[in-house]
Amino acid sequence: MRRLDSLLAWTNGRTVARAAYRLTLVEPLWKHFGVSDQIRRACASIPANIAEGYALGTTPQFIRHLQIALGSATELATHLELVKDLELAPREDIEQALALSNQEIGLLIGLVYSLRGRR
Image (cartoon, rainbow, N blue to C red; front, side, top):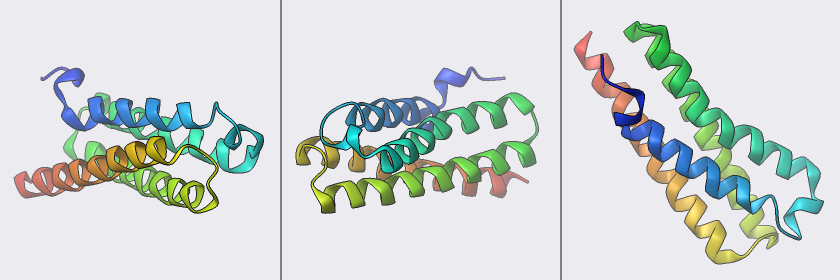
């Protein structure tokens, strides 16, 4: 069994989570509790679901958790677009978090398709 930290989707998911969570710690975004909380939950859910599915040890369970992580990554990207539209954080930081989340979405889609092809 490979180590979890060798899985690019998980390591990138952690990077996405850090970048997005940091956005919620600065003004004016931190004052908007609803969207900040949604961003925090979605970004933390990405690597957590990948890790949980990986640890369960079966391909169907892993795929299911990857799909949940994909949903969280897509949700995060949507929240980040809203933050960008409302100018609630520095544009450069939002763009970086969006780029990372879109990269994560691609990694997760690719991994799900790859694992489905093996079954």
